[in-house]
Length: 502
Image (cartoon, rainbow, N blue to C red; front, side, top):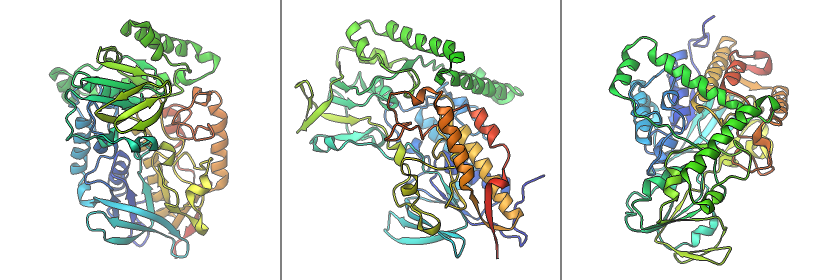
């Protein structure tokens, strides 16, 4: 049977979408194309859409997922320049897709949603929002809310660096007006952003002081350019792009086994670890430097990064790699635990994001005045990371338990949106004003997640942003994208309770 696209009286629900990155864009497009629904609005904090790809414009910014899989399945791009697309191309793709579906007409830019509250008597969500350009505050009532506030949104900026008196910025807030040429530059952090920034600026700066907290596992980044012939075949040869798309997808899916601690998966884990080890030995001849850059934890516990120029960059003569903790900041000088000091001209913080705080405290108030974040506490309770009890008609895109460590997260976004579309269609078919997942359905899911995670490397002793403060994995799905898609292929009405429209 097809999807029900209106209530019996011909009306459609009013939908609010928070965020205009890939998640919010997908929700808006699917509402249009699957339900013919136009009664929606998108709220975006920034002056343009793009989310992560609007904010992160640092030198070398690029996706570490193959370009052919980092796109909407329903909107293929045949013109990626390289296997791994740089930030400008990804942002251009987003804008092109947005223009095709007329999303710009639906987006309120420079608008911050400050509070979202469920009113049981009216069966509505009330959104408080503010126009950041004018300061004007307004209110919107919506039947359904999509939260597209991604996890890589709020920069993690340690307080200790507030005392630094020179130019400083986070990689997600890059200062393009400052010329790094012949400057003494410090980079704090050694995650994916730093690994892309370092090779991009190392030949420009006079000296680079690189402060590493935890080394990353690095594997080769085979970033070949797509030739004109390849692009021609993608566009004009029947099924060629589709086959390449699927081959890349299943190749990434196969790597899920390297994150498993089960004996049956020891061989792929061993092979991946050996690849990273051989790559490190081959690219770093200096044994002392190699020791500093060698991880002391299980491969996959923290994010595995693809790069072919990071190790050579750190081996250059103008780079100093520090592993001692920074204990003090005075003027434009950093003081380390071993007593050494480094005077620098500019400080770059590649210190990551507050992944576990993607939804601010007191931002969502559900039924009976429940503060969603206070209720979650150390234990987020969601049904497949999409919705939660006490928050009817609220769908989280890339909520808890839906991140990935091995494949394109856009597959997860599409799967979640498609499931939400089925739920909205069911609401209209059954004439429901609200739909709420049961606590038992969430408990069943959380119990399974905890049990499955026991066999995955993310639950080992090492710390990562996949875990909350208690060491519990709350940001990741335990299995492959295919498993997630299969579980959400069909909508299960028995796991929800609804309220009839009056």
